[in-house]
Length: 360
Image (cartoon, rainbow, N blue to C red; front, side, top):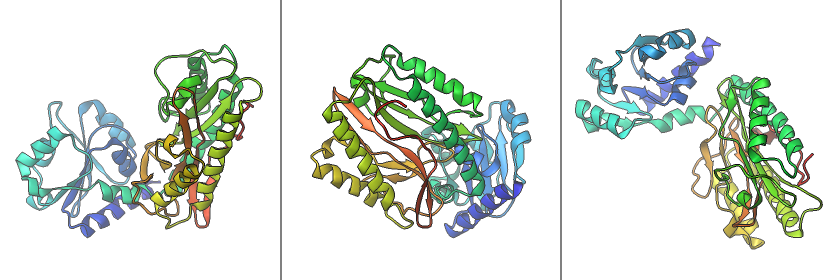
């Protein structure tokens, strides 16, 4: 497995050279994990010439030494050290064109004062070039996270009935995730019922579900540091009203259209446009109020952005979501979502649950 980490660092060093940088300073915990296997705060310095080094505070030093892979040296910082203390002692050739992935405004200003503004170069995009394309080990972890999410979606469906609180469903789903081996949830689980379902991310509180409610359940699990994401929409009670059934079928058809359109070298915004145009033709474009999807990996929301503003080309071994939704304010919302692996000729769905308004 250590070869995986070494290969990622080697490919990053190629990009450092290609972008005429002298080194890159990585502060994002997700990026540090991607290159070292250590999940926690710190600063990872990868020079063009020299060995990578991870700087961590005393609180995390033992964990970092235990977890780090790929030949990365771990150095313990003092408790009061700041980002400039990591950089100030480096050779001038390392500091001359220093890329960075994610710095607070305060840290950026401190480094600018130390090195000069012209020496600091934003470099998060070169890291995303690597992270957007998943390797075999990453795909395996995401598949397991998706399997867990699919199983707990079954549990959520079983619990949806008159008199049950949204928070009860969330609590049971999270407990079951952990029993199935998840590290935790990818995000705060959404169980949004009744008129709250028209808010894409739900709303604070814990409503009691009633017959006649539309319920949006959006959940994801983390396994070995990798996320999944899926959504289903249900109707509690007998036969759903005609408007609910009509919009559900419209959203499901839009989802199928988008999935069938995903191919390597498709522009991400073109996928969004297809769904938007379909909704527009049916008079519902104004109620499609978010992007069509996003990348999934160490973080639940990653590039590529599948939206009107998306500029990335879809590529083989990307993991993405497709999640069209229609939201009628004050009435109800319907969203359907799966995590998908982009393959040579299309996509393979990694999450699975029936598409039915009736809880199963």
